[in-house]
Image (cartoon, rainbow, N blue to C red):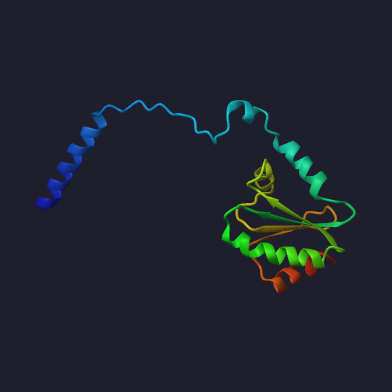
Length: 151
């Protein structure tokens, strides 16, 4: 009990000391890799990016498969060769695209589509909303997924 009261007294003293301490005035230097205001104002809107994505990656006449990856992602590095191999095999049944979210404004595509993890593969059967598959798959599993969706 005695130690408990001492601990409360110490925490009260420390808390009151820091509560009355002057808060330093930090001046924030902008980092060289952060977006400046002009660049932020010139960025495309979500509506523009959605229209651009639909025009570029979704087709009303053929199936499309879009693979989202990120630099430095170990699972993406494992999955990329599998995706490339299967994309060559299924090239007649669908168009295959790879989007690196670390390049340009590609991260906006991922945000618009609600992608939160990488790698993610989305299958769009003739412009219909398709299925999204998150994770690295072995070749046999990816082939099964494509067979189910590209009928």
